[in-house]
Image (cartoon, rainbow, N blue to C red; front, side, top):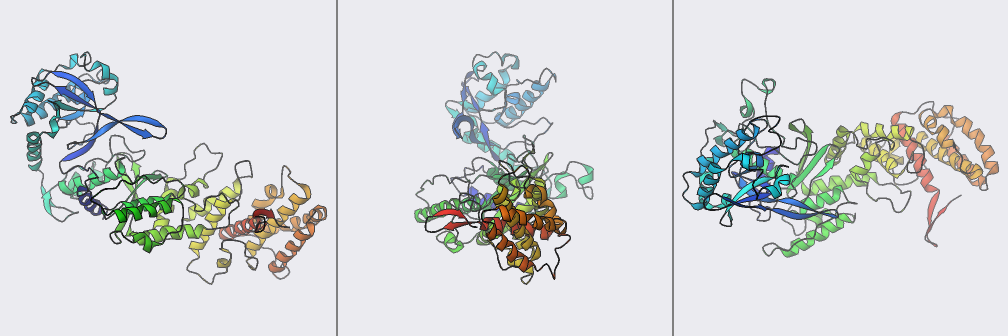
Length: 613
């Protein structure tokens, strides 16, 4: 289904003049230099083709993206491209010759043979110029050539080269392109029934590589491939194991490489080790833009929209407003979101993770666009909880969530890749969050201490615990835990774990009022034990509280709160539990957070936050 969706998206992109996607038999490649040739094949000049792009505050040179004859797939094998390649193949120069004698010559010769063979039947000046250059060029003179020397350092870094003649790129010549397309149309591959299209067509023995996936092989990785006997079935080698036609393989890899490239205005993003791409089965890209805004509501910047005469300007304007609304984290109305656009297309989200020379699929989501939006908004709704401070994020992104699972003192700030993928999958499918997320947050609550930039129980952690339990018990509406999985303090709840969390917060506050800041507070000493084994801790804390109450200025208010909570807890009939389960520990933390937040209320008259006593 993934390959079929990508192949259909290629058809959509090929009809979009703004996508500049490569047609069948061609590739979109970054080209650094053009070798300008005379009619007799002499090298007249080396012309840089870099384009300046803004990356943050810096302006960098980027190779020009050009449509060139299709790139060959190679790893350690020697295989040349037609009318373009890197300096090793085109000029026979590199820094590897000393380690591997013949390294440069073998590749130059492969490039020379292929291109002379392809161009010899073409009767035009451009083809003759390239043939003359390849026949007369000596690689020993390449490093010393006066036109090459000024650019040698950059060329040796691996930039790609093309040919020019009479002010035109040779690979764009009509006769040259016709010869290439005729060559590509003749295939000696076995005819198979394509698993993607169902057509009888030539088999793609090797599928083109994918680039732009984080931590994958920089030369390209493979989504579909078999290179060892252990992966083959019934003696079906390589592409025969999962027969895909050359046409379909080109379509899905071209579409996916476009989604992974900087040419795609709706940029990819990374979660853990997973590179995420997304697209709608529609020519309008506003769907993808809105999705990106939903996933990163506090961070994403919406690029300025350029008006195109051929498009519906009213729909463009409306979609831009929607995207800006997403960026400002306002509530979305899915009906308005679709108003004026071309229906409600199917939307896809694909997560790709590196796996040596291959790519593994971490997750794949497919649903109607409005359903996808509803699931993401449900995720944010489940996370809603009273804030500690007004300037905190209204919506917690998945990056905010994953950051809370990592120790602030750890040198490796990356969350578990498997956990990251599982959390995002749960968001897209509207399913319970993985238990590993809940366990990680509980572990951080136990292990961390309140410091300058770290809090044991903070807004994000409380929101995550609440959302996890809410999704876990959503289909048990009469379960007692439901009454505490709310935005703010529930003073009527009688859930023991929740009451104990509230009680601990009150005891902590009365100690602070009585003694002030000390090196080891009641929270530092007892919180972890109170959360897991409350019976061993609370009798001691309740005895100490009488001393604190007598010293605190507003001790009477705290004494009243303690009594109210104990009445709800009804300790005479229901003794304090000896142990709390993991879920109950989450409820304890939630009760503690709700009670702490309730100590600070909004004063409507002065419009300031004040502490209640």
